[in-house]
Image (cartoon, rainbow, N blue to C red):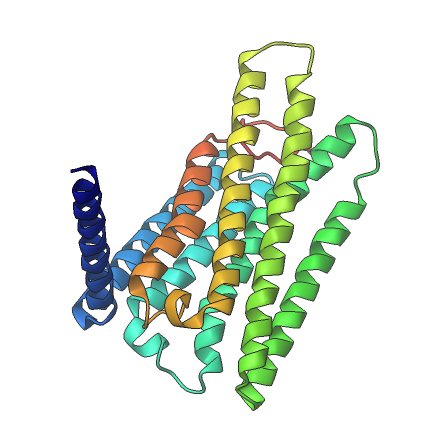
Length: 292
């Protein structure tokens, strides 16, 4: 009896697996499903971009006397990243079939690079705060930020140029590995400086509501950004080594792209923008770069 029950359970599990597999394949092969998924992503990115733009306008109206603080640049870049992706998915029928094919790579990969630049701004800000609080030199971090980002765009630009001249599978593979590397660098940056700042704040002697809020802010953003960049790294690596079943080729795997973009861009951006929704005070010191 036990053996018969186990066989029935095994058969049911197999049937369920086949059903899910067929459903997944049907969606991937359906033009209607592709359009609905891509238009949903377009709407989601548009919503996040709108929130970032509205917050940028609110901050500017609140403190018009100050220039481009880190907070303002962060929201502007969030608007650009999500706005570009909204346009790409809104016009997916044109964007993903243009020639030469390297242009499609640029449309898909460039927002990811901008996302890296946007969120490593937080790492830069936290690193400066941490070192200034410990009376350590902090001037070098802006140079490091600009150098790392400049090198990233230069290397990726060289990959695109090579693919434009010669569409090579090996170079495409190298490009994916490169995206995975910069993703793990970003996740480690959040882990190191988010963790350091969190520990420093947790040991701060004065207990206050503001301190608790800042602890929650730093801890939450660290966890969100570390996780999203780590997921991006893992997914890109898997897609690089398993192009048939796990490829992020947009037209071939719309469901995989829906899950991917929801986990690594839309949800993290929405959560971080929500956490950083508080406007800066009307009067802040000239040295302050308010984020929070």
